[in-house]
Length: 539
Image 1 (cartoon, rainbow, N blue to C red):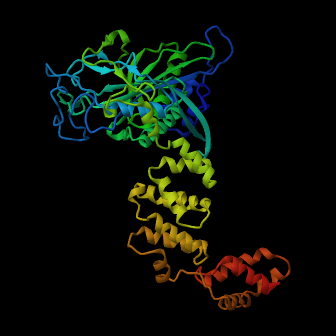
Image 2: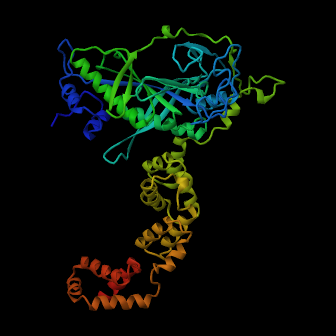
Image 3: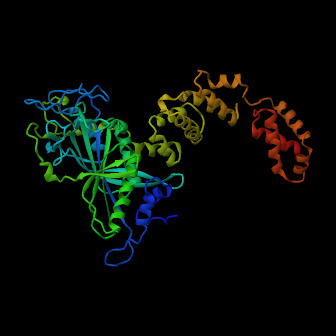
């Protein structure tokens, strides 16, 4: 067995321990060697450095600079205007809704909103970029200097939360490119311009992360924030959230190493794998006397490896220049709002701030304070779309302690959703149905085991209520005290050996008698009541 690697952070060691990276043996053997400096000084630990560039597709019915409709999986080239196709004589018209979405995102991420931002042309050639440049905000973006707080789940059961913070360098508006479709033999490429001109926010994160787990946790939190705001659906499978990871390694006290960029990762899980692989790859290269190239790489999820694509372009290669067809973007607040201007024609920062919804981190804090649930349970509720509303509706409609409700939500309800690959809004059990069931359990009309049976019956979606299921299957607890006393007496008379042990002081045997009563009543006797009756008769 290979020795544990010491030249990476704890998160990467966890990945190695779980065996989730391919070709690990090679890297473990290479990276576990003493990471000494060339001057022969003491052993040092490599430090991974990760920064992210996130491209979030804005929720808008039309594109950033044209009136073309935005729709996923529409027929190829069916949503293309003259501007999108870059026909001569066409001019861009900025989509106000996209600007408001970018400002709202900036406020939610604690950014400073620039009241005056500018658009640039970023030149590069690619077949699906018909005009030969991208309109972006590289030099003077709409928002700067923000931060995103997130939590890293650690521990054996991933129930220990470590608070983290990543700085947001800037948020810039830009347009998306089209899409190249390659055939299997890669001899022909077709161009679909439906995506060309779709509005994007590029959210640039500073290199404050150290491993794949941290980056994935930050992206999942950002995804929740954007979905809460309604500024981006955040569906990574549909390309609505794409991530570029900038990765380097260095020794303590030394400058950051040469970085590589892994492009267009569309899954938080793949992001973690790509970063951890790339960190280990760079360590292996450096420890074997090689040099890291400043290059762009792609992640192959099938092999778990990053693959070299091309040399990394520099800013000089893009030949940034001001966009001559768009004036500076001017945004106002209540103090600078111009008089005699239609409010519908301008963007007001303070007005947007008033519309900010409850953000995920604030929602978690409220759930913990209001209901007394554990912090890790608040993460489970918030991270699952619609689960907070389901939980709070159940709590409102039942007298059960919220801590008991959360147990049913996570251990039973959510487990069935995962098992059947369903979302909360597709559940076969409504909040009111679960509330009715929990009320029956709380009032001791049914036992906990019977409640589990009723829950599974409700999941069948036959339209029956919990009360109807209890009556039909005779699952209700026996309420007749005299009948229970008779059953207990029969059990006592039928188990003289156990009774003798109890009379000699071994009261642990009482549990066996309680089990016998439950067997006779088919689980319809309240355990606490049975215990009280047996103790009274045997004392």
